[in-house]
Length: 297
Image (cartoon, rainbow, N blue to C red; front, top):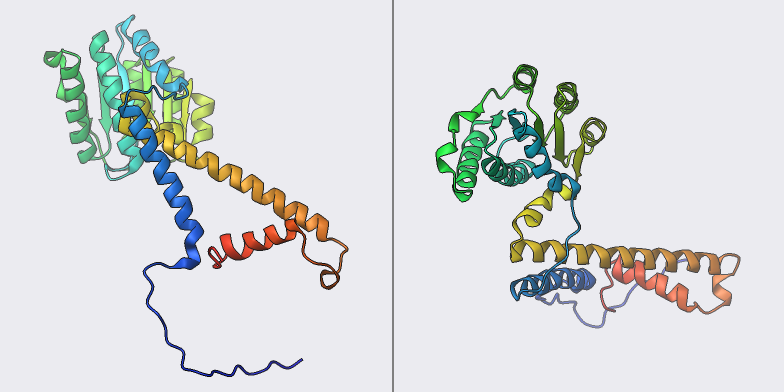
């Protein structure tokens, strides 16, 4: 079968467009998710209470600090081994603020060894602000937040050595971790500390789950700031993103069902002998317009 040449009666001229209409559905999804975020932020600012699922690891902070206060032992907070430009380190510092405020209320000692100098500076400012917020600025000691080394296992050797010597009653591991995660968690477990960990590193989560009492897994770790602060902007953003994920999940399930049923329906039927059914038309629209470049056509 030979193809016929296309005959043009007039010259083809490209027209300038403001938008790429081939990706119209993508724009719809973006507007839907961003709109839900804005709506939830406005609801939170108007005073409506937004329900957020309780995170066991964050609820256990008071318990852990209380257990350290009773025997007069210290609390240890490890903010990971990455620099302050890593989002996991930022999330860990946010949780550090809550831990520091709790230790200030209980008058417990908090030590924060860091592997980056900028993380040390940020942690000092965070802990100082937390002690000031708790009304005990005179009990803040900047020497408890100190820099060790940038070298991974040199840092871990120093921290684990201090854990064995001082035997902290509560250990918090919040940030980005690599091979040192199991070393830290097992050492803390050996000294009898209650341990709360949080990271978004998939390869290290199994070690924390196995060796720690509580673990913040993935997005729970990043949602901690909204959960702890209760600020309308953060809570609204969190709920809006959850709504977007819900819509995405429902659309994904609906698309899979349509494609599966369409495939079953068209099996054994010659496509030239029958008009496309509603399911087949829907599956073609999904492939060509939503997933493809057809847009709203």
